[in-house]
Amino acid sequence: RAREDGPQEYDAAGVQLLSSPPAVVLPEALPVLCVGAGLLVFALVSVRLGWLGARGAAAAWGLGVAAFLAFRAAGIAALVAPFLVATLLGKLPGAERSAARDLRQVLCNGLPAFLGCLFALSDRPDLGLPFFLGSLACLGSDSCATEVGVRFGGPPMRLLGGGPVAIGESGGVTKLGTLAAVLGAALAPAGFLLFSELGLRGLLLMTAAGLAGSLLDSALGGWLQFRGRAPGSERQTEAPWIDGAPTEHVSGWRWLDNDAVNLVTGLAAGAIAVALAYLA
Image 1 (cartoon, rainbow, N blue to C red):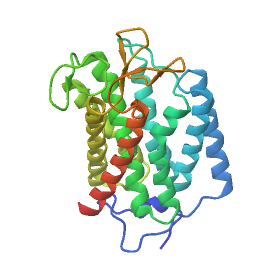
Image 2: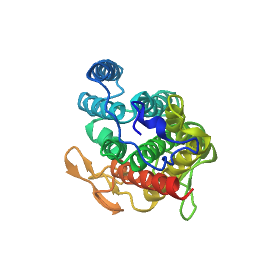
Image 3: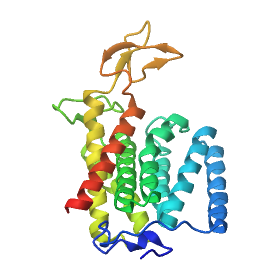
């Protein structure tokens, strides 16, 4: 049977649906308009505070509306929790201030969660909810690990093969950063739990999927992510392009920059979450 609070149909185990998965029931127009207006205010404030660029804020607004349509208030909470915590951590002293997230960054980080919304709205909430939460758990895990590890983790070590990594360079892990990764992975599932019957088991499964995605992010960052050399300089960079000119290839795949790694690992974490939901 379908209820208007569709996501509540998930049982206490967390993400396993009842024997007859309900279709998502779209909310009435007035709640959607109110939520859309609230998200618009949040997006404008984010632009004003320098958290998001204008086009990035527009994309984030669209993702927020999709999350509400698919999962109601629980979806908004799951979406906002890792974004707010990671953004506030990024403003702490001890590292360069993070630039406003542009459209490409928002799309690479948010597309996996958007796919989860589409699955749910296409009458496949058994795929949609875990994919949505797993990808957001990965985003929270990676963001918190980076912000905490760079500032307070000390010298990082390469996840694959060991060896030191320069602070701030992709592919490195620290003990404190790993702890932050675990806590960050729980942000989105915990936010969802506040407005749903996700359950402790579901929270743990989605946190595990997010942490797995974050570790994959570190592995790809140290193994396949692009590294280049700035033109006329010996300084290495992870940017494939500088001022419109390609950097000299040193290692990795040129297309696999940090944003592309986030996209790949977000999709992987969503798939892991779906597998855990069915196998656990």
